[in-house]
Length: 372
Picture 1 (cartoon, one colour):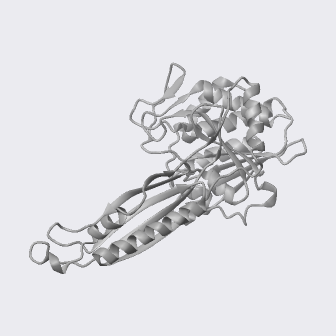
Picture 2 (tube, one colour):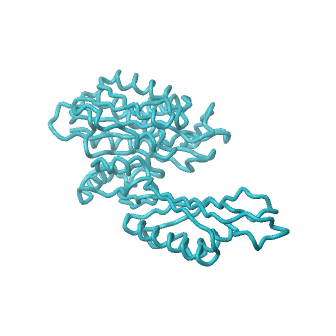
Picture 3 (cartoon, one colour):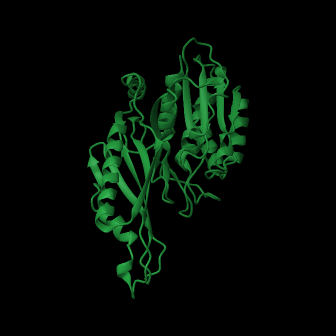
């Protein structure tokens, strides 16, 4: 592994602006890099479904050892503000001048992948087939992963089922293997308008219906593996009019989709009770944003990678997390993902930074895992 090259490449990557839906320039950069490494490329154009401009990049580097191979995955988009990143290397970290995000989420993961592939090629290291999967628009609802048309992906380039998703916050050695499903819900409460100062009795206040319903809902930490939140309550009504419309939006996350559906049923009951008490009507809609992520091999893959970390003197932790990632979407397609980190901290903020030593450690672990 060439540590100086790894950092130089990371700096080069974060200077290519690639916010969600606008990753085209970075995707073209990555296609060029992967082709130089001898990869076969397939581009999925699912971005046309959500107004983006970048394909999902599939790549395969043929191995010289029999086996099922491994997939290295990361995402190409970054959180704004990220234009004109000014990286500063100081005391073993890479940060910005405080005016932009760094983009270590997830170009740290991408840089790790590229350095691992370069090291393997330069040193003629024997390996099974290596697949690379780089998605756009992960930060905006996992749209890149969700819109892959798997029926069009050539069989010979479809990724290996064991997938290292290099997109975890925190230090090297943390291996996330389980993550919850997330459902989004929207409720529209409908009342009746009236003049609030002259004849409020003739109105039905939609905000009051919403308040009555929400007061009956269990929100926040439901149990050790389930959370719920309401983030939007909106009624565009002047204060002199009894509002006839109120919009509520929230989410539920759980490692049990049955539990989520049970909560949704309870929320609908709360809406019915509120309407029976206050009057008016309601419309309740919900959709699964992403399914659960669970190991498909009784943690065999996660434990194998933990052994690699441990052999390098890196302490490990197998972890259940509360967030979602592309891994959740890939799980639905049968992929067995673990999520590992490269030392990114304070992600999604202008205080984001990346610990260089942690990036080295995970890159070294990836190289060792692939080497046969």
